[in-house]
Image (cartoon, rainbow, N blue to C red):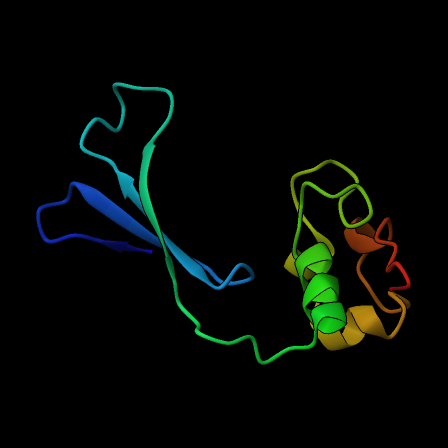
Length: 103
């Protein structure tokens, strides 16, 4: 994340969607939501195959029940990709609820 020089815009890198989201944060603290001003593509072509990209998007998605017991932390938050793809056998107790789906 990066703030604009005037502090009114927040630029957030949405790494799995290959985009940068721009938010108006001038009214931060006064409103319950931030106005999204734009989405900017950060990659012209996708280097990953569709299946690998989908797997990574699922792995990092805390809202997906396959990757998060409480919709708060995904498996990616508590382990490395290599460990998780090996089957979650050596994960900490908090991550044992992770189920790596077959794609």
